[in-house]
Length: 239
Ligand code: SAM
Image (tube, rainbow, N blue to C red; front, top):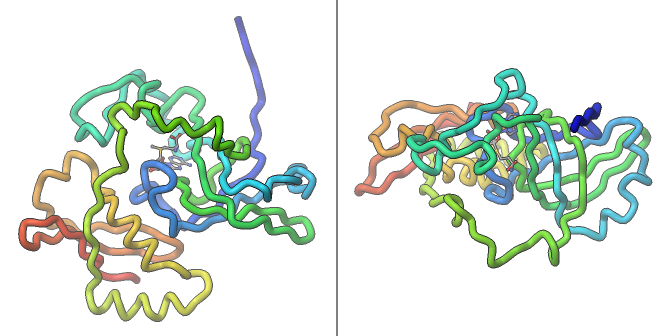
């Protein structure tokens, strides 16, 4: 059998996530992340989304475009297993897969339209800024939600780590949050850092390294703090 298809992006996703490091590993984990699915011609006709406003959530089918050059792997080491065990690519949500396609459910807030521009305002995405969107479909609860489903190694949402801000970072946040483009910034930073984005092999160790996560045009500098045996991520600074 053979099959061939020429797939094109119908849209590109605008998100606060400017680099892969720090992006949540699944959608719905950081709801303060707001973004836009910007439809491209000829799909930016309002008729393509007629009726979509009746749905609260969407499926986005997209391309892991930043990883395409690295091809796919038969097995991968899921971060959930500490990076030590291998599972088959089709048993994981790895980004290194044949055809490089991903899928995520996101919340739909609003449809924006003006001359030549059509965009869906969304939240909770796990996508890099600029990700090509291959298809958009409404999420249908009666069929897409399976409460009794088994979740394999990912049965529950990841444990969250407490996040604290330095005095300097707190002051900067107050100023940034006055600007429209940084609304929900504190909530976004907390949501992202609470996932502890460090590589799986680092997590068991004390870790003095200063890390950086790029959100919007800001570099968020943070490090792991040891306080009363709890693992605390202390957001040091925003630049
Ligand atoms: N929910 C999707 C799925 O299951 O198909 C994606 C899961 S995948 C594990 C999520 C990760 O993909 C993010 O944490 C980020 O590191 C990476 N990612 C997101 N957008 C990407 C892109 N355009 N190119 C490459 N990697 C991307």
